[in-house]
Length: 424
Image (cartoon, rainbow, N blue to C red; front, side, top):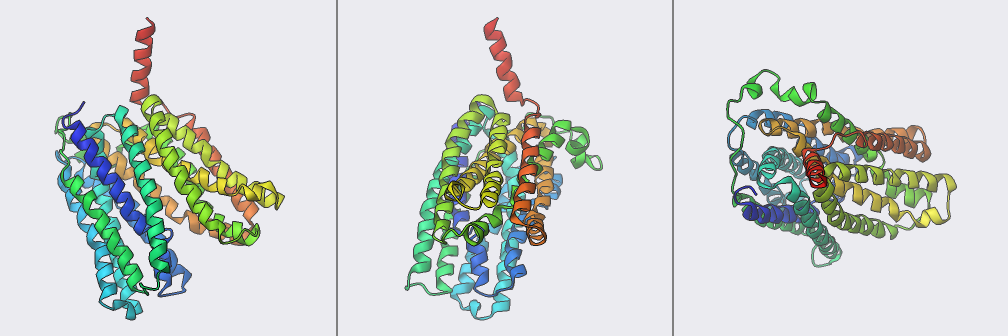
């Protein structure tokens, strides 16, 4: 085991759980758009929440990775990236001080704070993944992520109940209700931040000559020379095209299939519970058989969502309509496989000295999917739900086929070698 393994395992688990709780109070796909809608009915402005969140978190990572890649210690950059966590506290304070009366200034401050949080967390994430790979061995990483996802998911159910009570309570009128929600997000960040401060960085096992990283375009090494990395990213992008349809599931259910708005609650619950259960099961799969198998399971299950929605749209009624929450079950399982599968596999194939470059470049490539929901909306406007669901099904099916062709990770190879030795 690496030095300080137990200490760092607990620190990462506490960080993971409380970070998840904080983000549950400030979800970019529910809480934040509804908050912005209090100030404007403009769809582009409301949609800017998702754009800023994804673009400012994904796109800068290749540059931050280039910056820190050859640094012998990564924790100082993790600490610097934590500074943006004050952003939601600033928004809460501004709401309490009455800035909500000035719509333009309030929106400007909100988007500036949102950008501050996502950009700084982008820097912290590159260092976080590198520290995780060195502190937690691959045979324990699935356990860490799985257990953390279970507790984070269960806590997320509680957070959803708290948010509902705050927004429904006559005691908290707007903007005090959202000020309280953002303040609770800031409070939840505190244990997460303390846990990361307490991390004990383990020394890298590679010599610090830095020659490859200091060459021009050295950060492009994984894309130019590593076929395994390219295949992984192609698989992840294709599977990630599920985001073409995810914003439109609920609209399709209520407007086309005539399900009541009360059914939305069952969708959210189905997705959350599936995420909790998949954290437990996929964590065991990752530790036992490696992250490649987790990717295959997540990619296979992701096909179920758009395929079932497509069949329900074509059949137009009956059992498939009542089974619509399964769409969100599949979505929850796929989302649960991202950390346990794709990220874990990426950490396995990345050389120690280039790990930040692999992480940063991989996340920046995923930034292409920022426009996928907009593209899905354009396809829907020009064609139909049937066409949109069929296109999404085709993309994620290709992602699954690529997952079947991923090379074994070092964990699987070592396991196979041990099995062969045992048989001999």
